[in-house]
Image 1: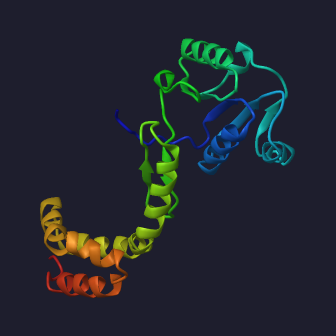
Image 2: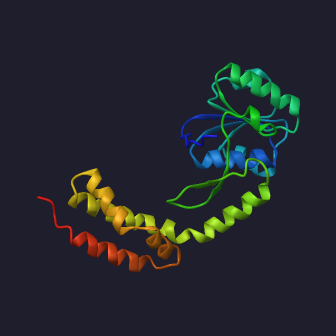
Image 3: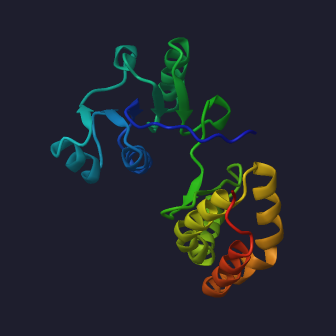
Length: 211
């Protein structure tokens, strides 16, 4: 299966269902700037709060095909398998991209567990074998790679310095392959970014300003 990142900012997302899974998905899409319309007779307290605060639109009703109008992404997340299947069928007929909470084979897109960083995105998926393993892996990755996430802001500045000194992508690629290795990454993970950065700055200064 191929994983792709898509931008959902300012896109219209329809969520059918109002339980705990719908709550998690809604908050994920909201974080990415999507417009959310929620269709369900009942919703969690958190979803009701989001609706009261005008963060999402809540249509307090059961599913019918007319609710799909204007949707780019559709998430069928009710606790009724037949309703989910009908929603998926109707959405696909309209060309919407669909996620079905109880049937991964009917999904056009998946929502893997994601480690929560500011500069780094790492997705984890065990193909449905174990949500518990997904959670534990996510927690481990968030702890292990926090120093890498913190490094990335400063690394962007160093990459610009290299770009100022080396004209071609080939030269820049060769520089980073020689100067930032797997050992460099291991040291960053162990909290030694300052030492790694000093070495990089020294290597950059030895390049010389391009004419």
